Image 1 (cartoon, rainbow, N blue to C red):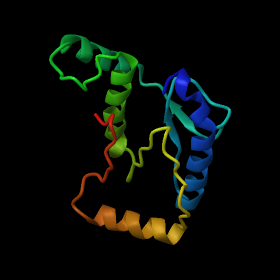
Image 2: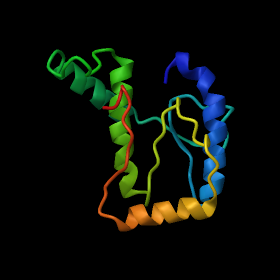
Image 3: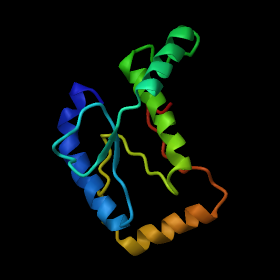
Image 4: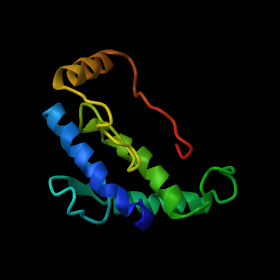
Length: 137
């Protein structure tokens, strides 16, 4: 998110850190050019080439992507970065993506429950599980 989302970072980082501790063998990744003091243990990724590719794609397809495609600059690029994040699946066994407006620990979660759900997902033929929002790419 941009500057308007800065107030969400402390709560998001707190929930993400708690969730990572429940999961155990987890790495907290943040797609951002700025390091937040609220997430000191996170690994920050700034995929400059991906951002440039997204901007180029949006420029080439300007006016042809539909009303919700985000001819809104940074918003559209951030939506395409969500898709790029999923490419990390070749590096990690399981990815959990959460926007800044998600409280990752809104409900208590223990390690056994996480493990049970994650193992069931990994055994299935599903490529992903998601909940849509108004800005899903």
